[in-house]
Image (cartoon, rainbow, N blue to C red; front, top):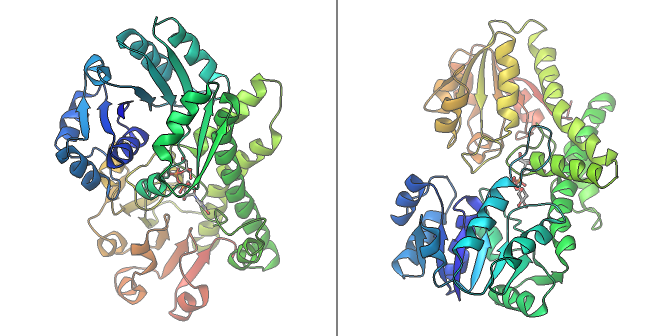
Length: 428
Ligand code: UDX
């Protein structure tokens, strides 16, 4: 198949890499000249394990091409994937202007019939709006909804081994054609109507966010009764109806999807006349989990944090990414800065991005330098580099052996036996 992918962000690139690797010819287009010129050389503008290598292989095999000219990218395409950003507005509602603008541009540049596949996350009703745009082109174009469920940091794993592929369409032939792109994968392909496919994406992210907030709320209860949140969630997860995933208590969820999609679902529900109180609580628990960790620090170092020197390990919103959007670690860092703390920080991949938005953190080249002379070490993302660090080496450079583990990476009794004052989430 000849496929055009509009948008070279996480979703557009991972989709382009997957589709080209499966033997299709993919023309990926983006307005950003700098990004496209790097991509043509097989270089990424984001950090995503394995993606640059896979793209390079497919570029060399003449199956993957990058353009900034939309008409050129569309020239041979039978299928057009829309994979552009749908960011939040200040009121939490989703901003569909980029998606609608991209659809208008594609509609104007088309020179033949095509199936239009929307991969951008957008609320129910969006496919209908897109179809109206393409109905005016004079070509036969049908819209298909094919939401993307990939996680940053493991995007390729999710593209090649998805838990499911969802295809929402009103025309059976188009639905089958898009299903055909994925039929070699060992996965369930669920064919639905437009609105169900659109809602599945939001419903899934909302549910996963809810699991995390549930675990985080329980972590606070654990502290009140002396229970251990890790044991509680293991015990819950053994029930097949619950499952063990996304029950890791910590500093709360961040990133470009959960915060934005939960807000968008709450807002969209409001617009259609439903007050989604359950998800509002999920948001509230997530926002206040940062305060809970701050309380843990205050309980250890005392109320007056002014002048305290703190080492922050992990600044991205999660491991294996350089993405700092809605990073709970940075939110906590901002609170600590306001309280007058001196902050040093380290992240294996996110430092370039952190430097742009958080000049109040003195970034260091490694963990040991970050921790030199500090009053406390705070572990804020669950990088394996941090889980395996040698506490005996840290003990030699810190001023106080205080460890605040906001991701429950260490065994409390082992750390305490080594003489550290240790606080973790819900394991008092
Ligand atoms: C998420 C969805 O998983 C993915 O399906 C969707 O397409 C996009 O949004 P992503 O944002 O890349 O993916 O990251 P994910 O691994 O889901 O983690 C999201 C946040 O939740 C991170 O901040 C992570 O640290 C946090 N998290 C995750 C927890 O706090 N506890 C958990 O148990 C799991």
